[in-house]
Length: 396
Image: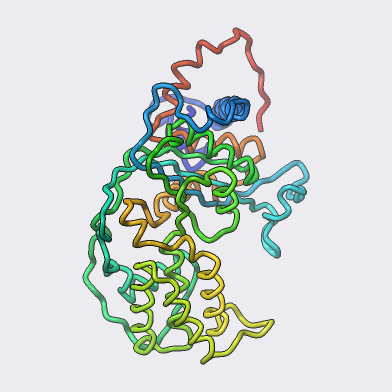
């Protein structure tokens, strides 16, 4: 029931799945109660792990758990999703949720926070193992698609760009993911940071020789890094940075004029030469002028200004040539795909969750996506925690 309730697109669908696959007549209400109850048990276990970690002395936190060897490379990535929360006040925004409520949009949408903790296999190189930017990032059609999907940037032009042959996204020196653990919550970023660092400690990441923390430019990501992962190498997701470069290079230009500029800036970005990109952006800003106070986000001047601000704030985390030499990841593709997998279950205009139900489903979704199979241990040990008392629950 818990597996069906977590993986199906709805509890109603879980009822149908159980009927068809297991020949079991179980109502959607019963599936919902069982799924939420087990999810809440896992949330309680998670909170107990955090409490034990917080009570540990600092030297113990910086050491590995017993019998847990460190991976060669440890990587932590974080990002956010969305889901609708309906409380007893039917959409009333709590003080804690107020910053997350979208102005002018549905008052029910709230942010979810998701993290990936991955052990990787890679080699250290004296020279950049992939000095030339992969062709997928200098393909006009591919970059239009990437920019639209990642940042919502739309670059239009009357000309038809040439189509290049589809190529593999593999590149020399790219780290191989060995084992992934997923963490997900509806709680605030401070709680999420503690959940991440405890999960990393349980994986033995504290003593890893090479460690990376990858995220986009959101300040919340880097506040978590500063507070909980300061010994990890901070890396800005390359694709997010490239989208800003792409939009600024083509801002106010036809494709035939802006594309060579973009290709040069993209190669500089790939090579970690952000200073050169910023010089080119400032020269372009001199040509266009500064944006006005009420400038549209789609205006060329605003796009160039946004790119300058973004790269200036993030340039210390954009040494991509050095990261490749160290065998570290430079994109957040794994966390983005993980968020999409979790959103498939919890996100939808027709889906509304209670606070407790949301946290339970997020926990179970993360558990099932974790290759460390935490639920296998949970089910094995659960009979030992039984008290012999029946817990009566109400629907909802």
